[in-house]
Amino acid sequence: MVIAKISSVGCWVPPKLLTNQDLEKIVDTNDAWIEERTGIKQRHIASPEVATSDMAYEAAKICLVNRGIKATEIEAIILCTVTPDMMFPSTACLVQDKLGAKGAWGFDLVAACSGFVYGLSTAAQLIRAGCHQKVLVIGSDKMSSIINYQDRNTCILFGDGAGAFLIEAGTEEDGGFLGFHNEIDGSGGDFLKMPAGGSRMPATAETVAQNLHYVHQEGQQVFKYAVRKMYEVTRDLLEKNGLTAADVKLFVPHQANRRIITAVAERLGMPLERVVINIDQYGNTTAATIPLATRDAIEDGRLKKGDLVVFASVGAGFTIGATLWRWSY
Ligand code: COA
Figure 1 (cartoon, rainbow, N blue to C red):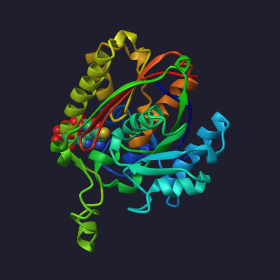
Figure 2: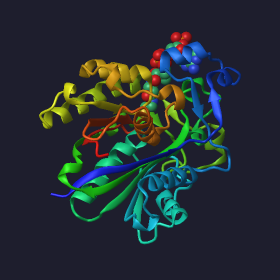
Figure 3: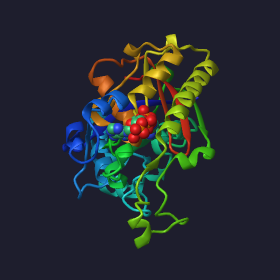
Figure 4: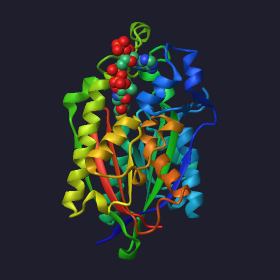
């Protein structure tokens, strides 16, 4: 059996910050409420000329430099996003061209906050099946492009950013991919969505006037679902692999709300020292939270070769996923 391993990580966030204090000047909110209810202190916001593909390109470049390989060695690009530069061509195509990844194929993967976790399990299968040696998984979202900065329920939550993992064929000694558990549950679609801009409700002056091209969310419904399902898929994935939370060195959850993360960790019996939380710095960057959290854990010396790590998420759809890896470098 070919082993699929993570061999490099690269991330990029735009330099401009939007702090809770900045938001106090825009909507009726305050720093104490935001921090207590979400754990967020600041988010990075891309400037108008920077699109999702630009952030993805920067993250991918860093990922390739960290591994010391050329873009022409990439065989496939899985670009996870809900904020593509445009409906088509895919953002994967735009990034392939910018990178000069000649000969690669690829596609956009739309699974909202679970995009990166789905991208990882998909890339792992392409490697394990022997189809490819090197697959780039990128999570990139310019959430600020679909947020209504007059809606205090949503504008406090999201930020912009991008991250990439290189998934490569390896050997047993490298550790690598051990399993995944993904689900979708479309019955929850109405709780978190961008209603207009698709074939159901194409863009018109009315849809724009009614703010239908922004994120609409029923926060409490999403919160309750996220806690329950992120716990369940992680528990089930560990059980399937004959493991318990005690075996896991690092739990890297999607960063949507600090309270969601701590509630899931508590249910799993996972002490917070083994949970990565960096939502205070970035907010919810949708497909980019997991690579950003992983990058920060590596830089803090919290992730070492041989460590068992679980990546888990719940997102709009609903999409739910967890994937288990033995860290390879
Ligand atoms: N600042 C101050 N007050 C705010 C506020 C803000 N930014 N946003 C909402 N409030 C108010 C509400 O109006 C409400 O006031 P009321 O009691 O007078 O009606 C009160 O705070 C409580 O609102 P509620 O929606 O119950 O807050 P909450 O504790 O559920 O927190 C979220 C709201 C959005 C932070 C929370 O529901 C959440 O994180 N949900 C999940 C979001 C998520 O994960 N999304 C992405 C999924 S991948």
